[in-house]
Image (cartoon, rainbow, N blue to C red; front, top):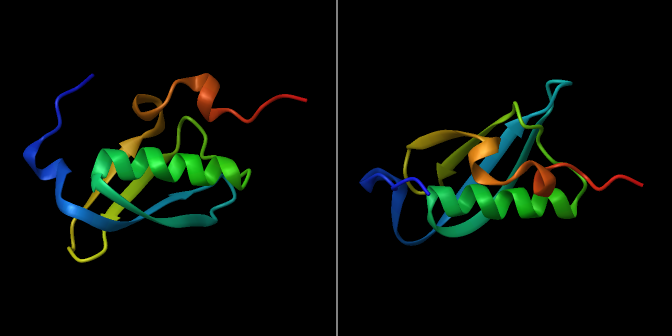
Amino acid sequence: MSKLAESDILSLMATCIVSFVDLDGIRHSVEVEAESLYEAGVLAIRVFRQHNCLPGLVSKLEVKEWAVAESKLFRISPLAPRSSVDPPQP
């Protein structure tokens, strides 16, 4: 597991907006509470999965802390193994 940078750790629990743009150019966003930007990305993937709106492996998640004007971009592959990102096959 990679080491988190000091800037990736949020002060206490923070509200974050996590979003991605799908292949049709539509932005999907969720709001989560997390202790780090990385955790916010993982929690957002869980919410997107619950709503059958998963980002693809080439998508980038944008994670913004609500109270701060800072954001980070994460590639999907480091956040979750492929089997947990792809929707289940019928």
